[in-house]
Length: 283
Image (cartoon, rainbow, N blue to C red; front, side, top):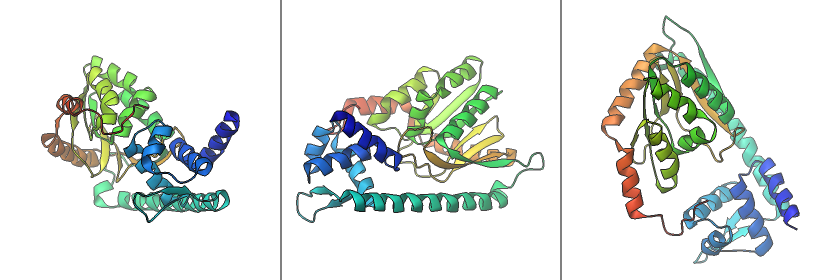
């Protein structure tokens, strides 16, 4: 029976769901409508995580909330749910194509216009491509780099070998400074970044452009970074540019944000003092 469940979940993931979404949908399909609390207990996670997953499933048309209080969440029948998920996936692909065209159009404007020295840019389309580009730039940096990233990127750096390359840069005398929005679930990857010698800061509820600048020339940037699950095949949309003028603009933005941020060590101490959010369970 467990093998059947695992295969069912694998098939759902292949259909575009994250593992959390697949497990939650299967549970509701098997056991009927539930409120978030018993769901969190049964799935061995915390309420906030269940709420996020349910919201994503509702957006995909696979779960339906009741109008009663407390709210009960029900799985939509399989055929209807898969049809809705397919429509959502197709919609996201169309949106990615739109983002790609927008980024290409932005690159033609003054802000993204290549300098006289170089005229290179490309679109990064997956986490795998992002990791490969980051490792290449990091291993070849002469001075170091700076970045503003969502906290999920800190976890990706830990999982896929980026931190090992960053450590070499720091040991070789390079400067590495970063800014992220650190919450309780991000303590471990943030601490790993600090342990290898990065100068990391916390900017609360950051909602601007995410970017990195290497050697005051190589730039990777995005309006937003939507990573629903940590997988090398997860689609993203970033602009890589080899442009000192754009790098100068991003660096000035970074310095402004740096002044408004607090040291990551201070943020981690604050989170540890507060303790985990209600219902939090370490995954």
